[in-house]
Image 1 (cartoon, rainbow over the protein chains, first blue to last red):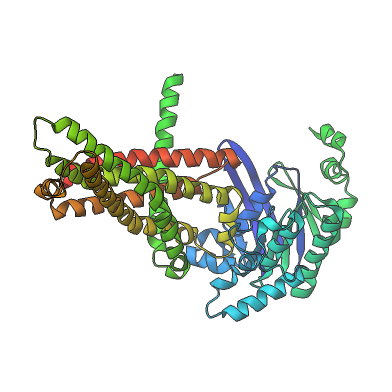
Image 2: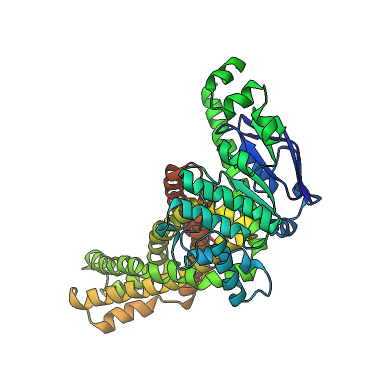
Length: 249
Length: 255
């Protein structure tokens, strides 16, 4: 069971976003993809669940070539993949409980009682017990992100994809989300791919880190390898030093 | 050279839009079999599209009926027997003004609402979220709205047309000193039950047009709040234009 993106090319109009992006994530691993804003990290992530199709290249999940799946096969695959969106993407017109239960209602023969129990369980995993009847507009940004996480884990997926789970959050909530991601892996054994700008979280939760630069992977390695690299592009990003990046360009 | 490029760009964009609309139509047709996804939302959409539209549709048709009666009386006086006021009000409300004015009003109310709602869902990644949760957006968003539009537009149009005729009758009674018998005589003179079917057929196509155009522009929204505004406007303009073209088409084909 793994996720493999091989030689992905993707352009929007005249703008080449991915130009030969490749990465492999093994079972039980958590891999962070770092890179500047607009580098194409979210675009890469959306390829995994078929929300975006590559212009060239292949995406393999669980041994299935995503580009060749029928719509029904793709929906079946998506039941094994939880996706945490950057801004949570909660359904405004639904309560928190209904949001978290959305994926569960697609499971045949799951009773309303079982759905309610699982919703409560997931909300308590993200420390939001009793929030079922509130609406997304009534909770804070950090709580929305946690609800997004609860919705993603509700169907007990094998893979969790996190799109900037800590962006825009205060340091305490960032640490809470980081701890939750680590907990998902430890307690549920899920394979995780995390898109992030936040190097603190990336070093804390990742088995490996890959840096996306100019449409492809600039460097891939363990957190220690990334910390000690001499590559000025990676160092410039990790240490927040634009002077190093200017030397490269 | 610049103008040739501009024309080429417009043509390419139009062809692209037709292709995307066709793709959406095929997707929606296939999604009809996924009743477990759209079924639970159908009644809610019927209420929003039909019942909630009644006040504006009835308001418009009532005043249209009043104006029709007054203008018919003004035109006919001294030349044509006044009982023809009933004929003109009935025929015009049922065949033309009931369906078209209601269709245009609902293109604004319903079409804009659908485009704005789905457009907001699109730019806030809620549509992507639906897909990741294994919901077909065609089944969840498009099918219940289009079916509700096809069912509820004729109902609203029939009620609006009926109220327009009643308003015309009341006007004839109160302001034109016509007897009920005279108005009803004129109304019956040219009435054919086919006229009602004609209105129903037209309004079914108007309902499908307004809802599917709203869904199309909503699902192809990009660019945040400005994009939502643009989609909403485009939805109303395009729906209104298609309604007028369909109106002429059905008149040519069915009458």
